[in-house]
Length: 233
Ligand SMILES: Nc1ncnc2c1ncn2[C@@H]1O[C@H](COP(=O)(O)OP(=O)(O)O)[C@@H](O)[C@H]1O
Ligand SMILES: [Mg+2]
Image (cartoon, rainbow, N blue to C red; front, side, top):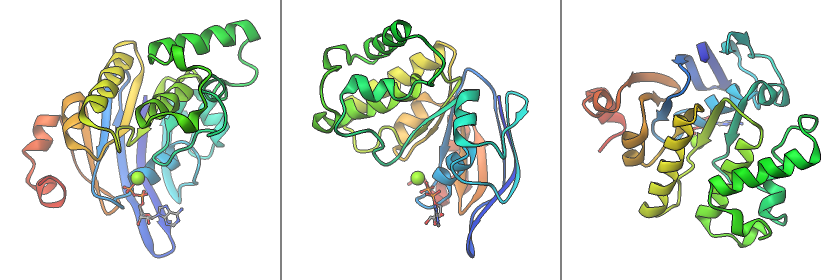
């Protein structure tokens, strides 16, 4: 589904990504871990076209998307949530989710139905009129996810979606992510909390200082000495 080959990204003298290659098949939960500043968010920025790559290639479903604009990549079927809050704080839950929809793709009635489907799936149907800035953290994360789903993606990139949540809330997000995978979506998630990553992932990539230092099943990553020395305690 997604093929990344020899990707490089530099910020001045800093090598944020160095020769990163990875392959993601569809209908699985893929995870990206690594210390702060490893280049995880930068990789998402390159995949979604927010930042240009210096060199390398990104292919999505057989098509070269390396130099496409963010809205073109979104239309191809890649959605994301952001590490920093990225919602419209003064708009309602409904309006934030509807904002994710591609403009020309649906008639008004169908558009509303689709938003209600998403809100119901996320357990937000009672909160459609609430203003996003007044929501507790879990609900704002769910709205972020709802807005990503509204773009009718095939691949969903989640940048530290469970950051700042308590264990029961993290558990809820994990279940939603697994359900999405079972419904046929492909998930690529960045995680700082190691336990939910180990629990949900089909496959894990490890980045350190811009380089991919390991990849494997949760079990393999848990037992990898290189990974332990830079990341796992
Ligand atoms: N737009 C940018 N301009 C300059 N430096 C950046 C930019 N984005 C990220 N960086 C730097 O690149 C490195 C990787 O950052 P990032 O991808 O955000 O790491 P991570 O998400 O793994 O914590 C960091 O040293 C960060 O300061
Ligand atoms: Mg980050």
